[in-house]
Image 1 (cartoon, rainbow, N blue to C red):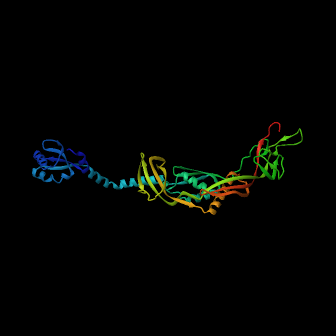
Image 2: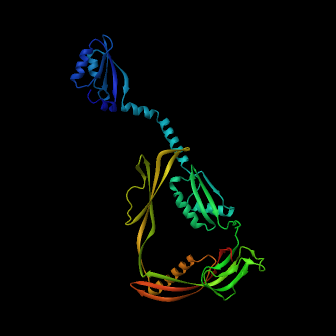
Image 3: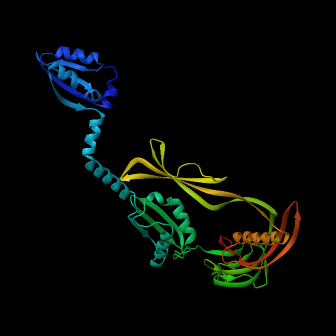
Length: 395
């Protein structure tokens, strides 16, 4: 038999023939083109051999004419295997459904733990998580990556300084650091308070030490504001000078803003593709084909597939494709000047401490050259100008 593999797929039957005309029967089968193989004699009047399933009906007439008796002993090959599978299909389907259910349950979110947050902040976090679709009984594949969750929560909730997000098994763990935590008492060595900028003094409040300047005095950097030495001559005591010395300071900013600006924005249209990855190769399961967007950005996240607590060598890859559009913004003269002023204000606020106050602003120079607005602004600021300076021998 030359193509035994093909016969195994199409099916084969083992036949037992008994009688006195066995040789004539075998010769007749060969003349009629019926292939037989594995022919074995089991006595004077008994032979076994194999034939293909398709030739079973063709041997009945030659066997009847030969006076021999035929008996089918064994069946093997593809059709009989499929029939056996179909007979046991209930068991196979049940096992498959069980495996799929366990896989789904192992890759769902079954717990959300939040630590370090007050009850009010925890309630707010849970509301935001619900808006983001992060809740129990939700498949992990449909949820954003932990880095995106962390960034979104930090941006939306003002009461927190930092939120750590970690996915362990089927539970999301959130570690929260809230704002306005009680400050630890700072141990300050004896020191003076000196000016850190040129300023005109507008207010003096001394907690410890002795003031060395008065309101309306003009000071320069390094000039003594509050002395950490006090007492009678020869009996001077050293203290860590503390207080608040508000001074009127001056800043200058320069802003250049083009009248025509081109930038990219997201249109809000997006699609997601899901792939099953194993051994470095991916099989698409949802979201086929390329997007019909002219310009787009792709964000790729991978999540391991778990079976109970074990990670399988299979990952679910989520590709988020967001449509991107090119937008050209053209300012009118008045709009460009107002935008440049706003940029100057933001720039000065970034350079100042939180408690500083902008007292006034004055435009020193304003021009439009080469399709750009150039703006030089002078700001008058009220801020604490004091900084510590250690007391050294000889002061």
